[in-house]
Image (tube, rainbow, N blue to C red; front, side, top):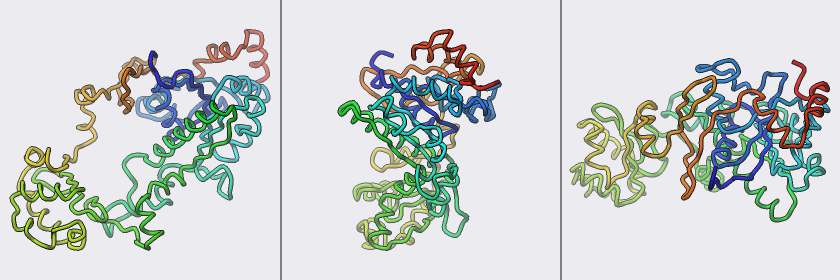
Amino acid sequence: MPGAPLRGLRIVAVEQFGAGPFGTLQLADLGAEIIRLEDPSTGGDVGRYVSPGRQGTDSLYFDSFNRGKRSLLLDLKAPAGQEVLHRLIRDADAVYANLRGDVIRDLGLTYDVLGAINPAIVCVSLTAYGRDGERHNEAGYDPLIQAEAGWAALTGDPGGRPVKSGLSLADYTGGLMAALALLAAVLDARRTGHGRDVGVNLYDVALAMHNYRATWYLTAGVPGERTADASHPSIVPFQFFATSDGHIAVACAKEKFFGALVELMDLPSVAADPRFASFEARRQNRTALVAILSEEFPRRPTADWIRLLRGRVPVAPVRSMEAALDATELAHRAMLAAYRHPTLGEVTTVGLPIKMDGFTPVYRPAPSLDGDREVVLAAAGYGAVEIDDLRNRGAFGHG
């Protein structure tokens, strides 16, 4: 992969399902070598068995998170499996563990163990609630995090039920934060020669995503409240409106945008109304302003409003997932990833959202279960006799 910015970065990943794999997916697309260690006692990553689009131990779900990586079945509970892990660590930059905190310690995926083998190794743990503390042994999944961290209580219309995001955003942001932490620690380790433990957990990341709303509450006591139509808590208008045939998103984040909006919508009385003359005035008179705009937008279809407003007012149509994933549009944006999988056939998906001069990602299928054993072990210096011995001692499971 000429020009790949992360070429030469080697990561041993003990990851599963969505959060961890989403983080290393970005690193793999950028050229890092990701060696997945999969548990033979469970048949590998549970994501391999998620339908639709499953064929044996391969699935479109698994492929979406793991393209371009390697797979090695390895029983880390067996002494022989630990031997292989320690051999791999010698030439790795990081170990990336997406497990419960107690499991990470039990499997020896921490710096106090692995640093004795490779002092520069970075040991990243991505857990639900932390490596330590009273909840270190709890499993956590995206809906649990969104619920407990206050996201669901902020999502949806006032008076309605708590609502989870349509995407697994707690998982994805957790994985991205873990990948960022890994790169920061590896950069430091290459400078100093010393690695470290790095802890990221989904719950803390979800809390951090509250950002300015957390500042408002913790500093000024401003409570978190739902607002209608996905509106911003203070900027008005900054929300969805119904049109004659759908919905439109409007975001007047600057004074000039609001001025252009009322001009183009031919609302001179609104432009002259002191109740709407500033950010603060519009916030205090949100109900009145939104009522006026809610009467105007249904007079035209969404496409007409987009043609009228786009370029002077930040607007976007509310589209279905299918419309957003139009293949022609994705290709135009260099966001289309397509490749042939040996069992799943032609796979088309979204690609890396990072554009770098001189670099174009090369997309490859996710690995078959244990499909890279020979390559990975040979690169680690194992010969055929040693591999047979490891097999006999249960390094790769007993199946």
